[in-house]
Structure formats: C-alpha cells, structure tokens
Amino acid sequence: MTASDGRIDARDWALLAALSVLWGGSFFFNGVVLLELPPFTLVFLRVALAAAILLPVLFAHRLPFPKAWSEWRPFFLVALFNNVLPFSLIVTGQTHIPSGLAAILNATTPLFTVLVMAAAGEEKLIVRRVAGVIVGLAGVVILRGGGLGFESGQGLGVLLCLAAALSYGVSALIARRALSDSPPLATATFQLMASSLMMAIVAAIFERPWHLPVPGAVTWLAVLGLAALSTALAYIVFFQVLRRSGPTNVMLVTLLVPVTAILLGAFVLGERISLREIAGALVIGSALLLIDGRVLKHFGR
Image (cartoon, rainbow, N blue to C red; front, side, top):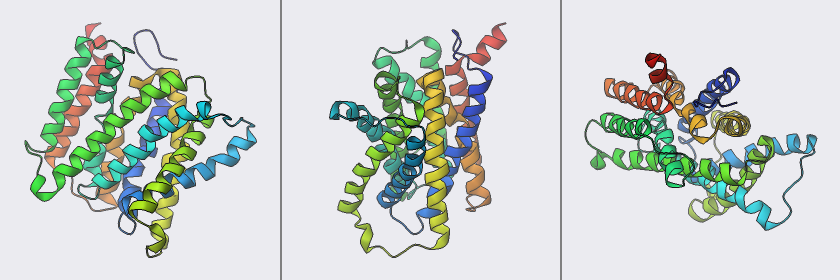
C-alpha cells in the first residue's frame, strides 16, 4: 500500500514494471497494425478482443454485471477517457510520428495527472509537483527541437499524443472517484465492453471496416498481442495498482514505458533513436522523479 510519504511498496513497483512492458509493447503493436489497418478499426479490434478475452474470466470469478444505467455510467465515462479518446489519439498520432516518440510523449501523463488532481481538489499542487510539471514540459520542447514541425505533419502527431496523456489523467480522476470499490477485473472488463460499443460506432461511421482488405497473419498476431497483453492483462494490473497506490503513483508507469517502446521500435521496426529524443526522455524522467519526491527525500536524508 502507499505510504504516507507517497512511496510505493515492492509489490506495486513490480506490478508497475510489468505494466510498463505491457504498455510499452502497445506502441510496437500499433506500429505493425497501422501498416494495414486504419486507426479507429485498430482501436475497435483492440478493445473488443480484449473484452472477449476477459469475459470468460469474469464469469469464472462470478462477478455480477451492472444492472441499471446509473451503474454502467461510470464505466462508460472511464472508457471514454481511458480507451476511446487516448487510444484513438495515439494511433492517429502514430501515423505522423514514430512509435518511440509517441511513447516518450505518453510519459507526460503523470504531469497532466498532477494538474487534473489538483484542479479537482484531490491532491495539493505543492511546489515540488509544480516544478516537475515545468521541467516535464521543457522535456517535451526538447523532444521537438524547439519547434512543432507542422509542415511535416509531425506537430499534429505530437499534439494528439499530448491530448491522449491529458485524457489518461482525467480517466484516473474518474476511476478514483466512481470505481474505487469495483474489483480490478470487473472494472477492466466493463470499461472495455463500453469502449467496444463506442468504437464500433466510430469505426463504422468513419472507416467502414467491412470494406477494408483482409490483413495478413502478422497484422492479426499484432492485434492479438495488443488485445491480450497490452490491453486485457495490462488493465487488470493497472486498476490493481490504482486502487492500492493512487492515480499519480500509477501514472509513473509511463516513465518506464518509453524504454520498452523505443527499444522495440528501433530493433524491430528499424526506427532511429535521435540524441534529442534521448535528452528529452531524460528530462521528462527527471520531472517525474521530481514529482514523485523519492530522490529528493533520499538526498535530503
């Protein structure tokens, strides 16, 4: 459980490490699937297959389904801000920028979570966290080399991924307030069911997936990995850590995600890692450590 000074115990650090690998792999899987499928169809397949994987597990544990709309509403809200918006924004952004850069931008999620929690009155906006937000934003500027590059389309990809990070922060607030008593397996399954319904409508309107060419075996394997590992399993872990350690702490996982995503992107997809991206990632990492406060407390002692 979370200590009074914000530290996370060994079990939750192990879960965060595992979650970083699962979510880091999602940027790699996205990069593979986007070669043959459009963004909204990818997101629909990701959440629908993940929900189908978790449903038998839910039945095996005999967890009850929500009955009234008032019980379903928080799951739809979390699904909107935790799946539908960020997944769609990230995969669309990845059509403009490499998967490694998208993962680095995703590492700003704790910065936005700090601001969302403070604005909602859930956590105090102390000086250390304000400094962390400023340093983190400086890291984003370094990633872009001082410019957004709208002429090449990369600026749009950057903004979409930053919007996804903000959406994750909002979802953590909603989950903390409305779903704190829901078992992690139930929360993961019901939000993915809600996401599947919403994404089915979005994909049908904008992409008409039934008219698309049938993708190859490699693409389907990547979709399966995205659904089973980076979504179904990842969200069970995520909601477990969220209940135990709180929104800001669980979002520190995004500090570890770029490492996995960049390595996969470089060694499997052949994406180049620039010195600017490394420097930006280090600055963002420093910001997250500053927000967390463990390093400062260690040196203080």
